[in-house]
Structures are given as structure tokens and as C-alpha cells.
Image (cartoon, rainbow, N blue to C red; front, top):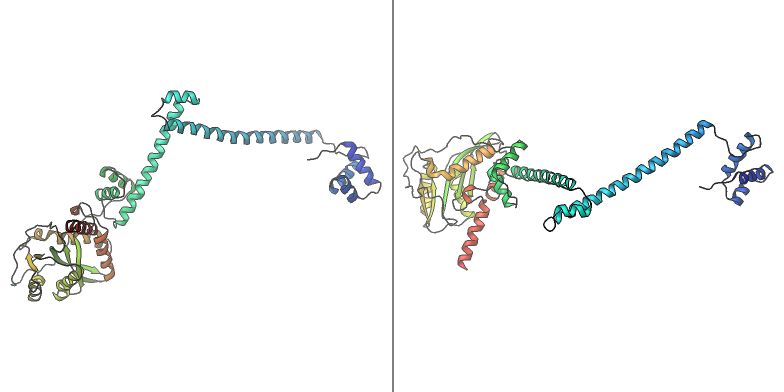
Length: 382
């Protein structure tokens, strides 16, 4: 900002008062017209003695206070900037000490870098707490994601396994603790009603399977069963066939009646279209009338590779895998959601086959187990 002397101001005022145009004076001397006009008014108001308006003591005091305030603001802002810079420098020193702890003694580094050892250790504790909290929140996000992907049915053990599959190793007890903090828990099982009708005089096959639930090859042993499920506002009958090698649902049917044609025959046809069977194939089921009726028995008998096996009377454990599947679908899904369509059932079975891990498969999904078996067979063939 340009400062003008009293003599210079007075000269311009007199020139203006003598009739020289203000615009011309402004262009010639480089002073704004409004400034010249202000000087002229002050000159007239002061009795043609002074161009600069004289301030009162109060005005001078306010002017001084404003100057002091401006100086203080400038100092404060500079200190803020400098303080931030110094803080960054100190943090860099802490980072250097932390990264070189295995090489140099902490005490010596603090002395050379001129930082307090106590301050360094305080910073280190804070960093550890921050990292622990960040890690905890990350773990919770992963746990929540797995819990939702499992349709809210996985407990702490299966979530711990899934976390390990994703490269995060946590103990089951710690996962359980975090789940408790998050207010989430797995769904509990409930009892269900059996639909087996074994009150008939049809011939019954022997219990050839004899609870040997761990065949090594796909298409070697299947188990089957029937249960009822609610689809929209009606009851329907779900028939499934599972391959014991990978526990996959290889075939299924949904019907509104219990006839063999619409239950076991339809499920058999679906299964055979999805997977081949091996010589010596065994189909195990309970003694339900659908499995012992002539139409189904003859259909199995016509296949020279296939043989039927049936549970002993009143012994559900002989068909435990199929029974377990129905318990799973009911307590994981049907006790909390209703199937609104055929597509809902298909969607659940697809999820069961491709996403749900099984403790009996070393916490693999049926799809992963199938791939493993096929790879092993290919390696043997090579």
C-alpha cells in the first residue's frame, strides 16, 4: 500500500481546487480519483489546513488494538503451522526408532534424535492400541460378511474355518467373543415330523449300506429321503438324492402329492441327468412305500449297475445323512423363511451344493469336494 506525504496530498488538493480535473490528476500522478476527492473533503472540513483527517484518542486506541490483534493472529497462525511441522518431525523420529529397534538400542536412538524415551514408548502403546482396534473392526466386518453369506446359520467354529480359508487365523473362542459383542449367533435346531410310510407289505431290501457313509468315489453310493416343506401357502413334498462322496444334492423333486412317480421317480431321473453312477452303485433309503413300490423297484432293477439298500425298521440312523440334510434345510431356512416358489427351493439347494461348508467334508463345500475327488482321479489316471 502506497503512503503519501502531507505535502504531496496538499499539492494535489490545491491543483484540484484550482480547476484541474480530478481525472487528469489521477492519470498524471497515479492516485485514484476517489482518494483525491477524499483529501479535498478533509481539506475543506479542516478549515483549509490539513489533508489527513485527525483521529480522536479513542480512535487511535482502537487502531492500536487492531494492530496488536493482527500481530497476535499472525503469531498464532505461524505457531500452528510450525507446531504441526514439529509434530510431523517427531512422529518421523518415532517411526525411525520403531523400524530400527532390532538394530540399535532404543535409549541410544532417543538420545541421538533428542526425543524422550518415555514419549516414544507412550506413542508405541498408542499405536498398538490403534492397530488392535483397527484389526478388531476388520475381523468383525469379515465375521459379519461370512455370517450373512451363510444365511445367518454358521456358528463360531465354522466362521473360524471360513476366516482361515480367507487367510485370517483366529481362535474359535475369539470369534465367539466377537460374535457376542456384535449380538449375532447361529440358529438352533428344532425337531421335525417324519413322513415315512413303512406300514405296507411290499418287499424290503437289506441294509447293504450298513452305515458306511464315506465312499471314496462319486456315483458310488446315493441316499434318498422325502419330507414335507411349506411353499407359499401350501404343503409340498421334497424328495432328494445325495451322493455320499461329496454330500451334494444330485437330484431332487418337489410335488404336491406322495406318489412314487412325482417323488422318488422324478428325483431319480433328475439325479441321473446330473451325475453318472459306477458299477456296484448303491441307492439307500428308508422303507417308505415310494421306495418299495413295484414301479420304482423295477426301474432300479433294470439297471445292471444299481442295487437298493434300505434302513432297518424304526432305525433312522441307518439313513442319517439324508435325515441330517432335512434337519439342516428346516432349521437353517424353513424355520426362519418361507419358500415362496419352486425357484426358492432351487436357489437354496444350489447354495447348499456350492457355498455351505460341511464338517464331514473337512469343512469343504460339496463342490470343492467334488473337484478334489475328480483331480485325484485324474492324477491317478496320469
